Length: 202
Image (cartoon, rainbow, N blue to C red; front, top):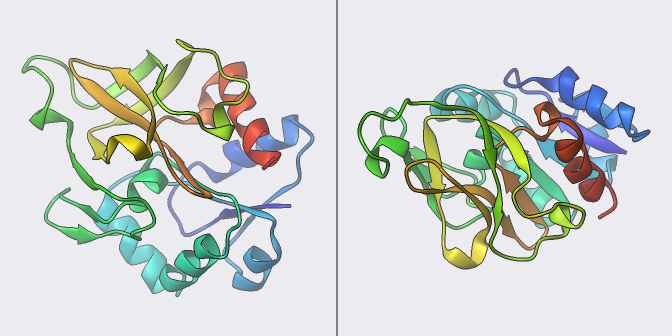
């Protein structure tokens, strides 16, 4: 079973429906006992980094999530959930991240040419930069759906995919059993479902 962590942030039921369409059991839950029993964990998220971090802490899930990831279970962060995996964010001040993937979250505006719309919103092609099992069935250049104003500046060895938006922006990361996608697989049609299916096989 896959546990989708419910901490008041994210398009949880769209994600659950995507897994259901693949015949994969997934539960939306904030119950540590249920999360602990799960074989795989997904941390979704939309909105601001600081608010999401505070909600995780308020529900007593911050340290618990770290321990779950460190247990070796396949762990996937999506969109803001991916950003939370990093060490720190500079969205509206400085905020501590979960520290599960090296790097920091910084504004897209720092690296793209002026005039490009922020947030990056819509479809963009993936360039696969390092082997990752969640991309086992993903072809170079497949399009995914993005909505973000900040991006993850991580070491090259942890970046598994990038997209071009005036500059190369991190689209996916990995650190051992911990994975992250800046895009929304659950909103990316058949190409996104292949990623969720690959994750479910880990």
